[in-house]
Every structure is written in C-alpha cells, then in structure tokens.
Amino acid sequence: MSNKAKRDKCHLSKRIRFACALILLSAPLTSQAAAPLATPDVDDIEYPSDEAPSAAEITLGAQLFFDTRLSLENDRSCASCHNPDLGFGDGLRKSASSNDTPLLRHTPSLYNLAWNQVFSWDGAISSLEEQALMPVVAVEEMNLPIAKLEKRLNGVPGYRRAFLAVYDDADINKSHIARALAAYLRSLTSTNSAFDAYLAGNKQALSPEATRGLVLFEGKAQCNQCHDGANFSDESFHSLGIDDRDLGRGGVLKEPSLNHTFKTPGLRNISRSAPYMHDGSQPSLESVIRFYNDGGGPANHKDKLVKKLDLSERDIADLIAFLGALSSNEIVVKPTAIK
Image (cartoon, rainbow, N blue to C red; front, top):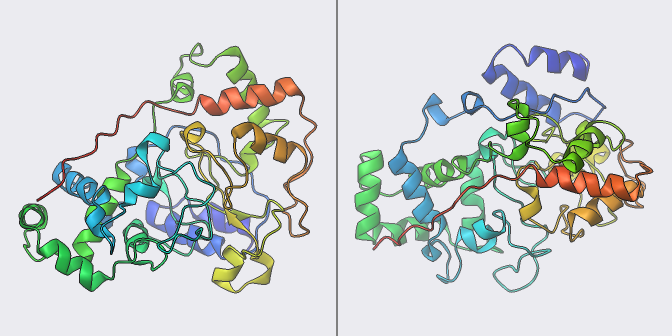
C-alpha cells in the first residue's frame, strides 16, 4: 500500500489515525500534500483512557515540573531546561548534562505537545507519559532512578496528600508521577495567536508584512511542505543537510534511509525559543530562513524538499513577521513548592 493510501485510511477515527501515523513514521519519507494551516482543536487531544485531566492533576504536575527534588542532586528541575520565560526552551545551543558536558541535542519547546503523536527529535518516544519521565531518569540529565524518585516523593507529606486527593492512592508510584507530569505538559497550549484570530475572520489581526509572510510560507518559501496543519508540523522526519554524526530517526529504527532525519518541530511560539534545529546551530529565526534560502546544509543525506529558495531581503523579513504572529500570550505561574 502506498503512503498516500495509508494516510487516506487514517481519516476513519482518531485511534486509527494515531495507529496509521506510527506506521508512516517508520516508513521512508515521500512528499505529501500539505495539510491546511489551522487552529488546534481540543477535541482532537488523545487523553489516556479518553479522560481529560482534572485541574488538581494539572496543578500536581506543575508542582512536580518545577521541583528540583526530581533530580539526584536536588539542583535542577524540568523547568531548568524548559524555562517558561524562554518558550519552554533554555536559550542554549545545548544544555549542560549532569556532568557539565553538553547534551547530544538542543532542548525543544514544550508547547502543544498535547496534539503530538511521537516525541523527541528522533521519535523514539511514543507517549507523553514516557516523555515526561525520560529526563528525570536519564543519567545525563536529572539522573534520578525511579526507585529513588518514588522514595523521595513518598517522604514528602504534602505530596502524599496531593497524590491521594488526585489518584485516591497515598502510595506515590512511577505511573502516577508520569500521569501528573503529562497532565501538566498537555496544558501547555498555544491556540490564540494573531494568526488564529486571522483564521477566525479578523483579517486585520496580521500586519501587512505578516500577511505577505503567510503567502510566502504557503508558496515560494514552501515552508508548509513540512510545517503544516494546526501545529505547523507534519509529525515526520527530514534531513536538512546538517553534517554531524547524529543518526536521528535512522538510529532508532536501524534504517539507513532515515539516517540523519529529525522530527519537524512545531512553530507555535517559535519566536520565543531560540536557538533552533536539533543541534541548536541556528541562533535566530533570520538565520534559519537564510539557512533554508541557501538550500540547507551541505551533507549529501539532505532531503530533496530542501533546496535553494531565491528569497529577497523583504521576503525574509516578511517570513519573520509571520512566524512572530504565531505567538500567543500565555502566562505561566510558578507554583508554590510542596512540603
């Protein structure tokens, strides 16, 4: 069956769409028609057991997210690398590991993960619950084994009360910790940007520059061939010709045709989360656009979609204006630490 036929079958239901997406993500990449740009719909979020989290569960997840006790040395939290003031990135090319050496890849933003089907740059993680715990237990990141994590949190009376209230279970365990963190991550949504107002009918919501940028995005610049749909991501994997040793998706699947391919990141609030690319090699949106305009990187594994664009200086400025119009004004309040 062709990739197109597989995609057509994915319209049958949310669950079938999800299963089909996982099949497609394991297949060699081919060009597909871009999905229309849109505003994310909360009805399309896939919740565990088809049940949205309660406000109390989200609050508990936020408290865990900002708590340095989730790291072995009590010196870093999830928010240390995913800073809400920096678009839930960290502003660094690559964060420092637990032994102060740079991590392998750039820290991505967390906005709109609720609508994602696969996670991490190489797609190795298939659930938000798994993703939520991965940095906590990873030796090079927060370095706290699950057994120590459970013991530590069970020793905090406030956490025992909170977990009992949310899960009707005073015993704090891996599953409930992952659920709470994932509940908070799913709450980090961006759906009310100037572009969303434009889609809703307010044609004055975009500046003339941003309006021209939208035309370029869907036309001459060909950005929407990969950055499409409501989240501005095809949820697939591409090589931009960046010449490094990171095999990306190919390393996960042991498939040479996918070597050096990485997941297309979403663009919601993208202007807040510089630098960019899986290796953090582009310091600004302008440098990203110029990188694409020049035809991407020099490596011979570059995706055929990446080619010179012949954009003018005004085109580049207009694209930057449009990308800026994808930001919204969420206010993130750091919770009080549980004792």
